[in-house]
Amino acid sequence: MSKDPDNRYPTPGSAGKAFEAQTVLLVQKAVSGSIHAINELADLYYNKIFRMVYYRTRCRMDAEDLTQDIFTQAFKNINGLKDAEKFKSWLFSIALNKVKDFKRKNQFVSLFGILPDRNIKNDEESDKEPDGRPDANPLYNVMRQNFWKQFEDVLSRLSNLEKEVFLLRFLDHLGINEIAVALDKNESTVKTHLYRALKKLNDDDSVKRLLKESMP
Amino acid sequence: MKDNGHLTEDRIISAVADKALLSVAEKEHLSNCSVCSSAIGSFENDLKQLGRIAELAVPAPERRFTAYVKKPERNLFPVFGLRTSLAAAITILFFTITLHSDSVKYLFTTETGSYVSEIYSEDLFDTEMDSLAENDLPLEYMDIYGDADPDYDDNFIDFILPSSGNNTVSETRNGGIVS
Image (cartoon, rainbow over all chains, first blue to last red; front, top):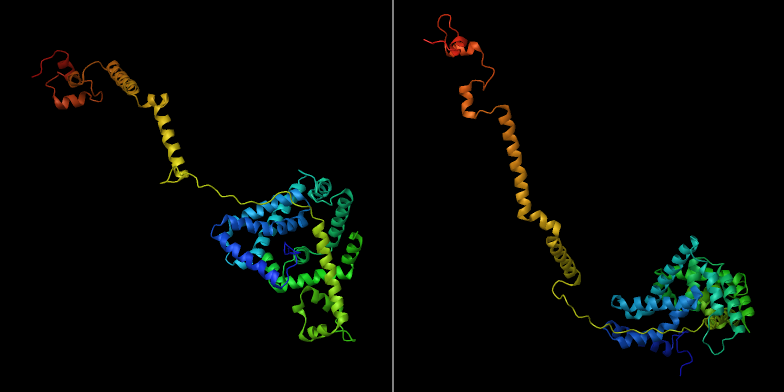
């Protein structure tokens, strides 16, 4: 059994290439209407997309709802995907747009005071929600809460695009070209913003501090 | 490059962002320099560690995505499609109800027609009565009566019927003999 079933840390090695080849094959079958292929693609990418959405919303329920929407939209429009090799970037671009819409909607609602601030609510909710992991316990939840607060502080130093590029690269594990496709930017823009983000984080040692405080 | 030949901090960050950003000379130095390699490796490890901790801090999703097969719907309106058929049905229903409603029936029934013609004939009758009230003689007798046109004066009558002697038309009309 592979140590990295989700292919979180894709390498240019044979495992990464096999995963990509499998994706391409499944996408081709899905385009031709295979429900089985669609379900397999969903299995392969569900956790990646769920995590990607959670990093940006910090609420399990919102992340689950958005992930469902993302996959529904993706498979509804899969015929529009011209290059099967770009499935991952394409899926992430859909996810990014969905998250953006979700945040915009929440900001609009918060602006008129219809609902309390979602981020505060989400933090509180995430502490209470049952985790489902075998190692889930109150201490773990407190640590998780602290981690996300500190992580938010770290990211607050970055501009929106720097933040997005950083998250896509080091948390979602996308390559530079995949990020460029997902964000619809050219590769040099992505590299520039990634460099700036890393410089800021390196200059104030925030990543090292965060790791020090988060390690049990 | 630093004075000591190692990569500067900025170049190390560039290498972490993307090794393709390094020049050929820098890449060559990197392949031979353990100091620079470990500096890059250390930063990369920190970022990988951050990614792993972030991943552990994500709760497990409780739902899974399952694509379902949408059963083909039976098409009840194969020729025009649902919307057109629905619009047509509503239009037909509307006209059926409208044409059979009492108000519309009343408009188009013959009873209404006779009612209208009755009003019209009453108008005609009133007009006739008014004209009779003004002058009860039938039109063909109006010339004989002579008052049909009140503008005729004695001079006009004299011109038509010249008077002889002292007999005036008025006298003639009052029983005199016209010769």
